[in-house]
Length: 403
Image 1: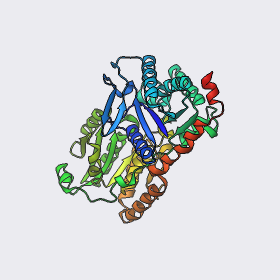
Image 2: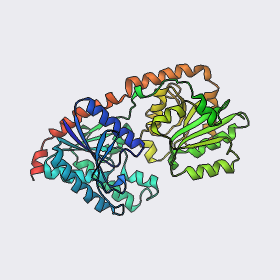
Image 3: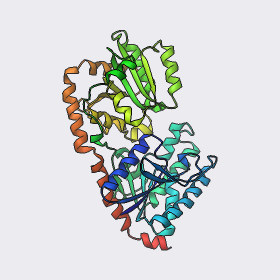
Image 4: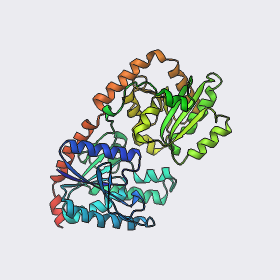
């Protein structure tokens, strides 16, 4: 089977989006499928038509970085027509956002190639998160209408979790056209219960410390400021406490200012972004991870990758009780949940976990077994087989294309 993927962005950029995309491509290649890959103008300003990254060939959409959304879609459609002629795919697989789905539908209709749309998040809710609109605004309603338009016209739909599946159903899309391909992990890529790198720990000033941590992008909805506040509350009882923040992003300056304002500069360690190959070494320094996501439509609907990665490594963690976390985490079995948006509740959860060290081996083992049996990329990606075959055999598809 020949699959042409249309991505918002890809390697060498790092994000949960790119890591999911790469996992899908690896598993599809392992199944003997041929994959080709196009990124849109969202990859960034670009003058080349192709780029090889770590052995993966990505077709790019040349742009000067100043185009509006409509022009971006036109550029994507034009580039997509070229790639379809060259690659002769059986299926076009467009991944969020809807700005990728619409050009894919235009080209798919004209060429007779079926289109699968993978909705990883709703465009309107992502815009709220980025601060470019507010829920219920005119732009929000228009964005939602475009998303629903694309969903109705795709031959098949995939999504990453049950929360988004319910949102798609609320738009009048029949269940028969929607398949959940859940986020997962490559279990073999994570060391279970690995010992910390003593040299790295010493270099970061963490010797003898109890380390709380977060690894990821510093978006506002991640609630990392709550972790810093919880640490401030815990410090009188744990003078050796440190917070290790691995990553970077929009909130980094605000988080550093918060730590300084609270007198915690010596207790909060910012590593900056680290190469993906080195992230495991930093994870191994952390006693308890925290995922204090705030409650909003995006976090209530969408499941993240980070808790699954923590389970695969046998890391102890606490996570807010937003819907995306509740879908992944069994409280007290594979991790621990606390009420979202509440620094005092986060403090209590962290104290509780630290006080139950004798239970950590059992919980770590349970979490690892969960990802090994339920959340491997091999299991998830196998579901695309039926999706693609239904898209190819959808009644009326060829007639619609001919019309």
